[in-house]
Length: 428
Image (cartoon, rainbow, N blue to C red; front, side, top):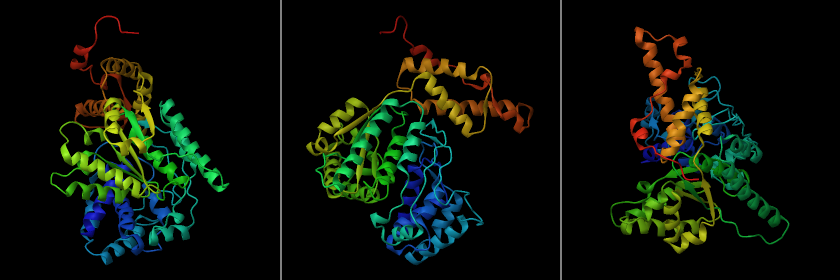
C-alpha cells in the first residue's frame, strides 16, 4: 500500500538526517519521492529540502509523531497522496499552521551532527524552481537540487576532530573533480570508485561523514539526488529462501541517486550468517554494478571485521578501493562534543564541569570500547536528568534553575569502569 511506502521513506529520511521524530516535513518529502512523476509540479523540491535543515544528532530510530501519523492515515490512494502533498506544502509554508521557519532556499543553521558541534556553516541551494518542479515530476538527474560544494566541505571542516578523515574525504572528492575536468577536456580518466569502506569504533562520526559525502557526491554530479539511506543486516537479510534478494532490491531502489550506508556490514559475512548473508552480498554486488553510475555504497564496521568482509567476495574487493579509518576521539575532543550538546540544549556549563568531564573521558579512553561521541551524549543526558532532579527537589522547577549544569550534576565514575582500569604503567 502507498501509505506503507510513504511511512518507510519518511522514517528513512528522518533517520538519515538524525532527527529523533518523524514530522510532517518528513512525510512531505516522502510523498514527493514515492509519487515520482505524479507529484504536483508546483511544490518545489528545494523548498521541501529546506524544511529538513538542519541535521540533528539522534542515533535512535525516529518515532512517528501524532501529526505525522494523522497525515499518513489519510493516504490510501495516489490521488489522496497528491492531495496530501498540496495540503502539507500549504501547512509547512510561510504563514501556514505548521510553518517550519526553514529557509526555503535550504540554508543550514548551526547543528550538532553525529555528536560533533558544527560552527554553523551553511549549504546554499542554487537550483531554480523550474528545475525543482522537473525533479518532482520526472526525477531526472539533470534537474537535481545543487548545493555548494565549498559550503558542504565547510560543514565537514567544522566537525570536531577527525583531521585524517577530513583529509581523506577531500582527497576522494579531489580525484572525482579532476576526473570531471579531464572528461570535459576529452582526456582519459583514472578509474575511481564511488564506494568507500569506513573502519572505526562506534560513535566516531561515521554516519555524519557518510551523510556529508552523499551531499558532496550530489553537489558535484556523481549521483543525482545526494541523499543517504542507512541500513543494517536486519534490513537486508530475510529468514526465508528468496526473500533476501527482494529486501536488498528494495533498499537499493531507495538508495539509487545517493549513498547506501551499511552499518556493521561485516555481519553479512560473519560465521553463522549462513546462505542468506551470502545471498545479500551477492545481490548487492550485482546491483552495485547495475547502478554504478548513480549509486554509491559506504560499508562501515570494525577494522579487522571489515577486512574479512571485503575479502569474502571478489566483487566487493574490486569495488571498495577506498578505506577511511575513524580514530577514537581524544578526551579534550569529547569535552567539546559534550559542550556541543549543551549549546544545542541552551545549557551553560558551570565551574569545574569541563575538568570533571575530562577526567571521566580519560578514564573511559583507558578502558576502550566506550562509545566515543555516544558516550558523551549519554553523559550529557544523565547530567541533564540530574540537573532536573536537583531543580525539582523543592517541588517546583524554575527555568533559572536549569540554565546551568553544575559539576554535582555529572554522574559519578562508573564502578565497572573504575574496576576495569589498568594498574601499572601503560605501554608506550
